[in-house]
Image 1: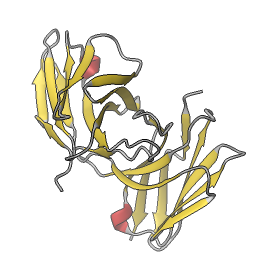
Image 2 (image 1 turned 135 degrees about the vertical axis):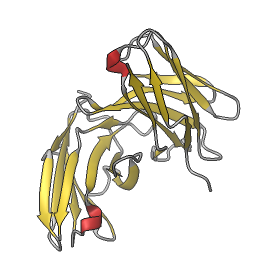
Image 3 (image 1 turned 90 degrees about the vertical axis):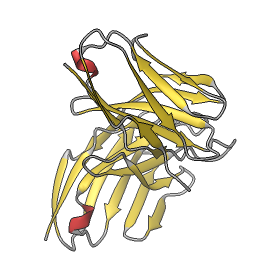
Image 4 (image 1 turned 180 degrees about the vertical axis):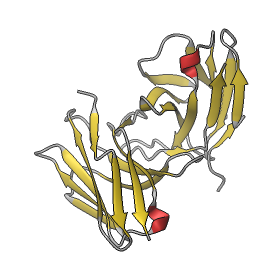
Amino acid sequence: QQQVKQSPQSLIVQKGGISIINCAYENTAFDYFPWYQQFPGKGPALLIAIRPDVSEKKEGRFTISFNKSAKQFSLHIMDSQPGDSATYFCAASNSNTGKLIFGQGTTLQVKP
Amino acid sequence: KAGVTQTPRYLIKTRGQQVTLSCSPISGHRSVSWYQQTPGQGLQFLFEYFSETQRNKGNFPGRFSGRQFSNSRSEMNVSTLELGDSALYLCASSLQLAGDPNEQFFGPGTRLTVL
């Protein structure tokens, strides 16, 4: 019930392409779904987040799509750049707590 | 505004020892959460402190403990260290106003190596 499943584990995309990472959750009490980006040697950085009352949120080249009935959400990175090469984590929580449940992470490599 | 700071950044200990890690949250943030990151288990929630009280706890043994001070700074302690405790320990702070999303901002982490 507490798991968040993330796929794929790794992803290679050409520069300018679209990177898509998917996550699925089980606990219907979750009401906050952030994505984090982590570079080697750094802590995770909040990238973009969504609440279940909207189906899509866009910030620059990053878009979250949210499907409440399927309990799935995904991150789309448009016009992927080599600087986007990092590990991406989806997460879920009940906004009343400070407990984030993370997916296993996706290592993205954007080839020039 | 300064971000979340964690000290020390690196630690090397031997089995059986204990260790204390420190976290200073973003100014004004009242909630501090701790996570353990390992290649095998990923990011796992340890505990959360809010207004000096532990509000949530993850599935870790009692060797892992923490506390929060009146200025919101937090410490976590691991006693009787085991080899498997080698990990990156991350602290995250959030404002945690009622009804607001749980936006957590992470520090750079403390890399603990247990020999």
